[in-house]
Image (cartoon, rainbow, N blue to C red; front, side, top):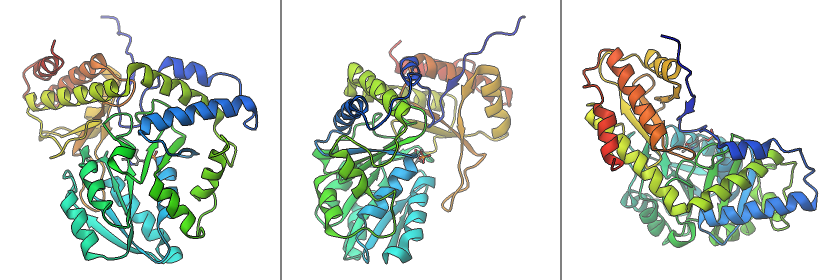
Length: 390
Ligand SMILES: *Cc1c(COP(=O)(O)O)cnc(C)c1O
């Protein structure tokens, strides 16, 4: 048989596939950023970002990755000399702990680490207990959707308890904004961050920081210490003039305008529902294949499963990629768990539909069977089809 053409589908939880309309827009000639033309594009992007974040307050676009954006929020909003509470139940929460450790001496911070077992979500009760036990906390930082463990917490309930204190809530929404319901103003989230290569349907290179009223007031309450490029005051001052303090990735910002236009044309609630449906159908498929999910509180944007005994991670993911064109992520290891080689993860964010998901599930099933797993042919795909109502 002739070798079949294989379409490539990037279903890693970042980066994700970029829609052709966005790629075309990014191929437009470079324009200078100190021009009316750029400022008009930037203004439209900022307004669309505010609708995406569900806020009437500023959403800053910062060159760099999601980590750049979150580090800028961490360093700009923690009051020098205060305590900060940082939650970790996976690789990214651990990174936010590391960043505060890095700044602890410069900013005089006491870092209170709240660790939960990987695959479990931190609860509002645990946050409240940490705040009660530690007077003088200026920031609570955590992930809404912890991508390394495909786990989501109840950020609405957490915002409710945090708002009763003077602590600001810094939310890593990098795999939730644009994929799962997040209501920045209505839920009272003080700072919400995401990155371009996740549900924003863009290549990597931009981070976004939404600032609520309490966060804006915090920025005015003390002089910056320890950061220059990452000092949010600088970005905010420019933003108020539809501008950026440093040369921006112009092509990405142009592309972001088109990607946000696509999200609004579909309807944000419809985008959330699409991701949720893909996620629940994937969970049903994994269960039908006899796989154990890695999360006790699954995220709506990414799903992970442990391998059955005898499956080699590298061989499995290479097979799924080289024979089927499906790009999956593996497991990650950190202080809380060693999941590298033990599980795989698939994304439901951005430019992805039921057909992409079914293609991935068929490939996963085929390669697991190839590795000796006892799965009835079509079991996972049939369960997912049922989830799609087909
Ligand atoms: C991807 C991701 C990050 C890191 O973002 P970078 O763009 O790689 O810096 C942080 N947190 C979460 C939850 C993520 O999914």
